[in-house]
Image (cartoon, rainbow, N blue to C red; front, side, top):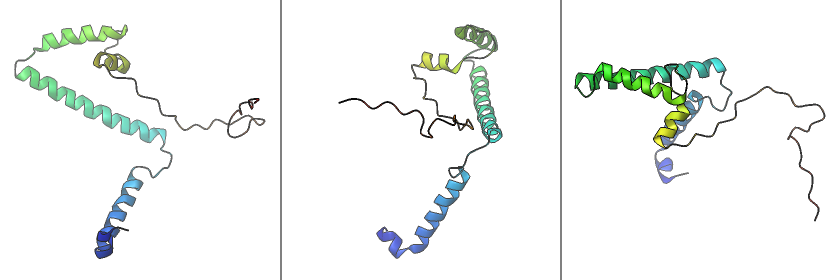
Length: 129
């Protein structure tokens, strides 16, 4: 307990309630459905598309680049991942920017273990001393 919590218990209570609300909003450790994850991802993609369009519009408006130049650059960049699909593999972008590929987080699974396999997974043999 902090000294301020002792003198101002209402503030401590408000802080605790805010932390509880934040925990509930973030899922509170519960499993999140794939539909909800997809919806959140779509919101992120829409936001990025909006920001990119705003940047492009500003660059064209200020005369930094023309729409034709932009289209030519996009065609060139599209070929960087060896697939002309009007998209770019994020790993190619990370490599061009000098960023490392992030570690993948394990997704929750409903895979069942074999009956003869212990719950902790395979146990390595003990080493002889």
